[in-house]
Image (tube, rainbow, N blue to C red):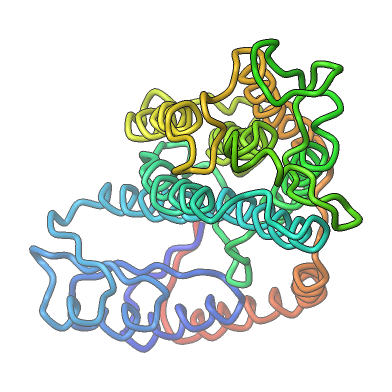
Amino acid sequence: MDVLARSRPEDKYLLVTGIKQMGDTVAVTGDGTNDAPALKKADVGFAMGITGTDVAKHAASIILLDDNFSSIVKACMWGRNIYANIRRFLQFQLTVNIVALISAFIGSCISRESPLKPIQLLWVNMIMDSLASLALATEPPKPELLEGPPYRRDEYIISRKMVKHIVIMAIYQAIVIFTLVFAGENFIPESPDYFPRQENGNIVAGRSYTFGGNPLYLPYEKEFGPSKHYTIVFTVFVMLQFFNMLNARKINDELNIFGGIGDNSMFLIIWLGIFVVQVCITQFTADIFQCARGGLSLHQWIICIGLGFSAWVVDFIIKFVPDTLCPELGKKRKHIDEDHQGVMNLRRGYSKKLSLRMPSQSFD
C-alpha cells in the first residue's frame, strides 16, 4: 500500500488522471476546496455534506449528508443492485419478445394466422413489461453484490451469460410452441364429454387452414368458438414465461434460483398473481380472450404446467453450457491484455513524477 502525503491540488488531479488513463474506475472523497479538481475529474466524487465546502459539493457527484464513509458502501451496493435488476428485467423481456415475434411471424407465414391472438398478446405484453418490471426491478440489495469485481468500462449491459440464457431459452420455447401448433393434435388428449374431438380421443387441430389452404377449424369455429388447441398453445406460452420469470432472478448462473426469494414480497405477489389471472382468463373469459368455451380440463392443465416447468430444467442445463464470447467483447479484452505492459509502464511513470515532486512514504 502506498500513502501519498502533503500533496497539492494539482498532484491529486494528476493522480486521478493517471489512474483513469490506465483504464481503472476512480472514486475520490474530499471536503475542501483543494479537492475540487480531483472530485470533478474522478468517475465518482464523494463530498462531505457537513464539513465539506460549497466548492467541493458542487464538484462532486454524490454528497454524503452524514459524513459517514459507510454510506459509500451502501451507495455502491444500491448502485450494483439497480444495475443487476435492469439486467434481470432485460433477460426476461428479451426472451419473451424473441419467442413472441418468432411465433407470430412464422405462424402467420405458414398457417395464415398468428398462434397468439392480439388480445392474448396484450396480456403477454403486460406480463413482460409492467408486471415483470415491478417484480424483477424490486429485488432488494444484498451484501453479496459487493463480493464481485467492478464492472469494466467497456462492458455491455447484456453480459455473455445473459446472451447464453436468452438465446438458448428462446430457441427451446419456440420449439415447444411450434411443436404444439403444428403437431399438438397428435398427442394432446381431449375430454370424453367434449365436442369437437377426434375419433382417437385427441383434440381437434385449431389451425384455421391446412397447409394447402383448405379450411380446417373454420367449420367448427362459428358453432363451438375458439379451439382447445390454440387455447393450450396460449396457456403453455404464458406458463413458460411464468416459470422463466423465476429463472431471470439469477443472471450469474447461480444454481439456486429460489435463493432470497422470501426477501422480495412484491415478486411473490406478482408471480403468483400472474398464475391466478391466467387461470381465470383460460377458464372463464371464453370468446373475450379467444379461449375455448369451458376452459381446459385437468389433464390439459397438467400438460400446460408440465411444459412450463420444463423451463426450470432447461435453465439448469444452460448454466453448465460454457459462455460464448461475442467478437467485439473478445477484441476489446484482447486489446486490454496486449496493452497491459504499457499500462504498467504508465503507472511507474506517474509514480516517479509524484515521488520527485513531494515527500512520500511507502508501507508494504
